[in-house]
Length: 124
Image 1 (tube, rainbow, N blue to C red):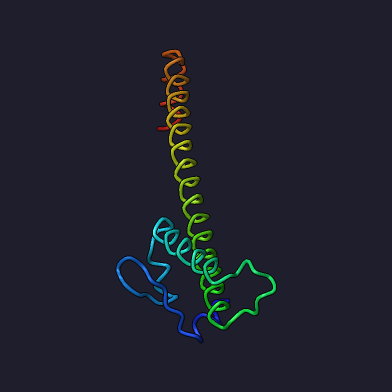
Image 2 (cartoon, rainbow, N blue to C red):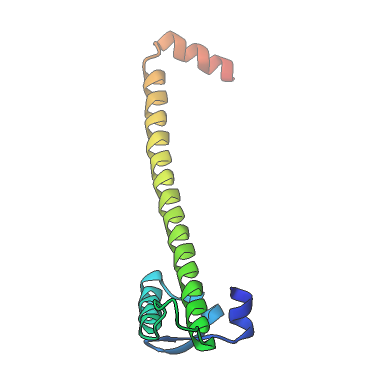
């Protein structure tokens, strides 16, 4: 799909002008969704749903462009979800480490004076 899109030098119309396949990665999924909707409308207008009609090269190009945009959207959304999950895990880890430090401090605080002095003597 990408090989064909790059060979054909597919261009995509965005609100800011025309862009190439490789440049689509620079846009947010929400911006790409607008492109996907426009491409889907173009396919419907050309009679893509008519199974008896012969598909033209332009129809095939539009369908390929739509598949490329959908793939990039899906990939970017998956990456976004992974970043959100990673951030949530980092935050949970921080909370757990803070709780662990508190527990360890409570353990030390619970030691008697004699136990504390013995531990200090051990350390030198």
